[in-house]
Image 1: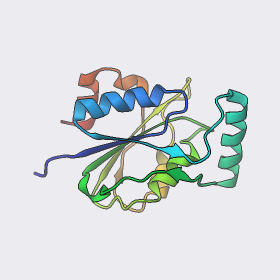
Image 2: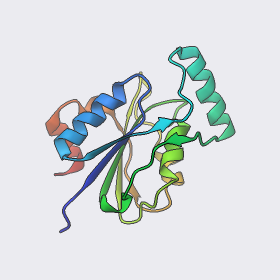
Image 3: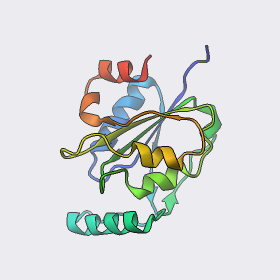
Length: 153
């Protein structure tokens, strides 16, 4: 059986997804990659929401800063993000559409304020290949043993 090698990619507007991503990377010995938009989202919440709604409406793919080198080395990719507009932020779709996920398992988690697990289907439709597992609400990943059970160490 091939040894698992994890990439933990995340987009975090308020820092919540970042904290969980860092915990996952540390627990799993994975590499961390922050999904960074070329044009930062406003920290003023109403402006951020307006932009997120507009991007969703336009099915936009915001430009990113940086790229994962040697994506082929990873067996598993964990992607974390906040729930925006009932799904993942469009910037996450920008990220996944850049790579070939053939032979990889994609594990999703999202932060939210009561909306639950979101974004799986949008990400699944944007990924060219690979297995996309249903997004897990981040509050279920607050303990290391929960992370290990989720990723089946």
